[in-house]
Image (cartoon, rainbow, N blue to C red; front, side, top):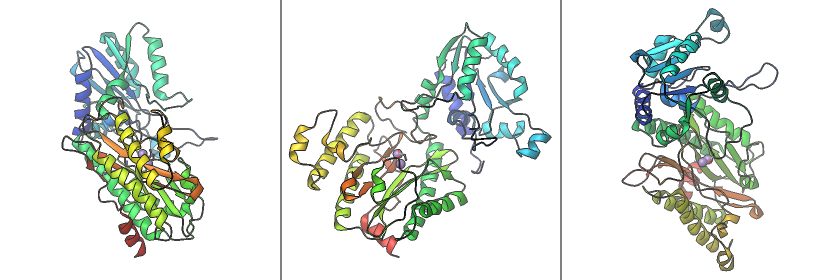
Amino acid sequence: MRHAPIDPQLFTENRRRLAALLPGNALAVVNANDVPPTNADGSLLLVPNSDLFYLAGIEQEESLLVLAPDAFDPKLREVLFLREPSEHLKIWEGHKHSKEEAQKISGIKTVKWLAEFPLVFRQLMCDAEQVFLNSNEHKRAASEVESREERFVRDCQRKFPLHTYHRLARLLHQLRVVKSAREISLLQQACDITEKGFRRVLKFTKPGVNECEVEAEFVHEFTRRRAKFAYNPIIASGANACVLHYNHNDQPCKKGDLLLLDVGACYANYNADLTRTIPVSGKFTKRQKAVYNAVLRVMRASIAGATVGKLSRDWLKESQMMMNDELLALGLLTKADIRKQTDDTPACRKYFMHGLGHPLGLDVHDVGFTTQPFAPGWVLTVEPGIYIPKESFGVRLENDILVTENGPVDLMAKIPVEVEEIEELMGR
Ligand code: GLY
Ligand code: MN
Ligand code: MN
């Protein structure tokens, strides 16, 4: 782990919050993610399991957390199982956590090697009444690959078929959507590192550079600050910006084009998600500026509109109504287009075809119940856009905000966004 040590109170407090949601005599299990295989004997780097990190701060492969808050033996109320370090592992993979280290990271007193898991687990299962197992529940998740967690669930239900099983994800989502002060501070660090990358790119971008060279500037800034990409960056010049999930990032940036940058840093597993759109030559044309400022007005108004109690659905609708007016003023929609719209197909969808934002945290499209009203502690992205393939450009702007009782707090307030500021910084 590259990041600075995190106060284990963060994880201890998260376990306490989960224990408070569990019924009596319950047991919960969370597994690490698999190391993703590639071809031949290759593999990708492990992506730490967000729930395991949330509850224990552990990023090491094969780890397993068992929580049984009412266990008869107090030492077994929180147990972390880890790979046992060995000379072989030391030579081939390097350092693995010692028990003491894992205790220090997680705040969990009982750390055992994986070999002990079957016996301890059987003991706990015999006393448990309700079993909460984990699953990756996201409305757009579409993986065909069975995860380590799913294999565990299958195994566990086969070995203990008469237990009553529940979805741990329901409880974890309820908790994770509300960020604690410690989490907000880590998210702010991710945003601040993203800002450094963006400022570097403002200085670097000029006609003739390739999109991949711009990507490399972000890599440099993020890596030296102990961060990585939160997601595959979108570095899209000209008409490429109209491809919403563009990530070829291999085209030359041409004079007169706009360059859309959807890039975020991930620091200590907390993600930032920024979008800025800048002129390759350092100066917006009149038309580009008009479209840009339309998107900026919608972003600003939508940030202000992210208030406690609002439903995501209504928030989106408000932004779509604003966008209709902006598109009318830009000559992209007519009054007749707007008269023809229905509830399900707002007129602006032709140019603004995606959502307005999503929860952000340990996952970029973070977990949380988006059918529930915004509550204090939610962190959201706000990302309106206008895409005009006919004019070979698209503009999206995206900031990350915190919902509070006193109104939204913009975690990206310091990241340049005004036309004049961007032109000034690019012109230096
Ligand atoms: N970068 C992913 C998103 O904006 O949702
Ligand atoms: Mn984004
Ligand atoms: Mn986003």
